[in-house]
Length: 443
Image (cartoon, rainbow, N blue to C red; front, side):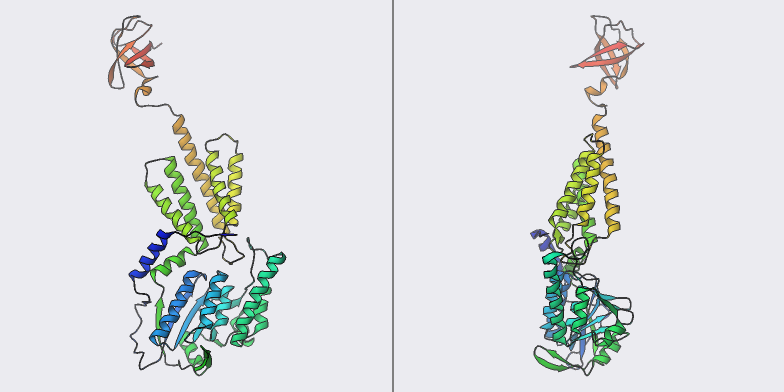
């Protein structure tokens, strides 16, 4: 089960930022292009997870490439995978694209894993740079284990059929892509070329465009012959709004924002009036919750995190001999491991971050709780209550039944005592009654 939060304020901020710039942001070093006289291609780069931001980026790029007369859209891809729902939308857009689409897995060392495999196979021309990999598209359950039971079989069969359909439409190796889904098979560029998984292996973009020239591809029901050998390249970047959404789609960043929000709010409640931790914490928490609209979040995991934080806070104020603290840490770690629903994405929170945050959060909350508890039990040192136990100097003689005065805390107070005290003697304050002190002689 996944949790979806919709925050109008965050959405409005994103839209405002996105609309501040033009819909398409060109690279600063992009040359001027005369589209009427020479062929050109639009180049975009996907370097990270597949999420709604990248889906929007590709959709907008397809529209602008078609409107402005680009000869093709080139997607330079390097991804560990991402959301299956976003991959399905991207595949749908590419298969129905009004311009030829070339997916280029690059640079060397890059990969088109999981969702990236489907996107690569959906392209009119699929290419890889030397030293790149493709595959490993098997769906997994929460925690990274293989899907089990009827639901696991259902998801696996759907994904395998989805992959075979893409390969069939583009005339590529259907059996291999099914094995990539069912058995997490991954291969390098040479094997991918030999097995008809990709069409071209090219060391750079210019070589790719040269090799792609002369190929006939199907675009919107018609056959198009690519002529890209001398095509100019115009790079298009994400809009600010898409960049923000893309950042919020990183599970590690979202997790750290959630923790920062919880710590900031706890610090503000523990020390009212500091203001900054509360404001910063609220912003971080809202951004984290807004990202749940992007990532599939498991409700049970989120509730376990909140329970763990609550138990840790309780440990600071209740003498449970560590039981609440141990339960809080356990609930927190389990909730963190289950926070992202990995049956819908292969993106997970880094385990080292979870364990590090769990240790840091435990120390911070217990430390702040200890300080707060110590301050609450400390004897008051201000006001009338702060006089009790203080030592003062007798200024006017005091005798039983005859009040005098005592200088204490920089002030002269009326004082009574059962002891006879002469001026200059030192006396300790026993109690206070209105504006009169009860004192006794120091031994």
